[in-house]
Length: 390
Image (cartoon, rainbow, N blue to C red):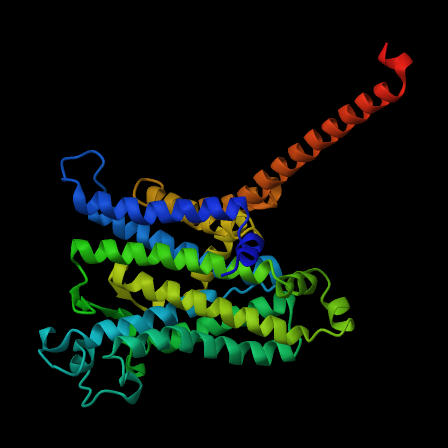
């Protein structure tokens, strides 16, 4: 990275965000591993897993903000890419169980033995190797997004129609993965994981490392998004968002730009899903539910569309509120509260939390600059006119 690249990509706010995420990614695992359980500063292991889940959601929100906030593509099916990345990692974790499953079959996962599968399906081959699973985490969501985007953008499907089609896509995948004969565990999905790269996935140290990797992935995803939106490519994406027809008239191949950023966003969502699964311990078809994708869009709207930082913060805040309110008397009313939150933010804070704060800050900066310019002009006028100075 050249200094010019870093200066262009990382402004003061972006640098502070990266430093905060890095501090969280280092201090929380160290507190969990090094401090005794009796210490008030020790972070319990269950909180490490919970916060790790929030970080994965923040990366998913970043991927949505990249296409929605900067390119105007409102995807209501991004949960599908998140789930596909999770299933790719889940297949690797299932292959690592070996003969330690309930039925002791060294090759077939327990659900296949239960359903009387005689051999491993061809699409499970290679998932006993981590590098292959990591490749599939990127490749499967990326290929699906590329194919879907190529057909949709080439046909110039935009706006609410594109949103409905993305929602239909994730619902179709939900129905497919619910089938027992599809080879992915049906309704129960994939669970009972044992090891990852030879380490016990339930061990305290493994969970701490997974949390650190999730923070590192969030930082890397943020830098990638910043590099895209601050480049010439990002300016074209914003032009597509604000005036697609005019941008196309100027000679830009709008479909190519939208296809690139949509595929990149899907790959980021797949990585988030892959990091999510070993920390949560299960992946099932419910992750494909259209409601999950809609909820992820709400995270971005609450935090601030088109800010990146706001998307990550919104994901953490909304999911923390979900954890807090769904564990008490208000649990049956959480969806109503989430809907009310979205309506209130849309009406009162249309730019989201971070976007509104940025607007206030910029307005204050403009007022101070104007006041300083007026004072400087008054001083210069007083010096040039000695009678006024007297």
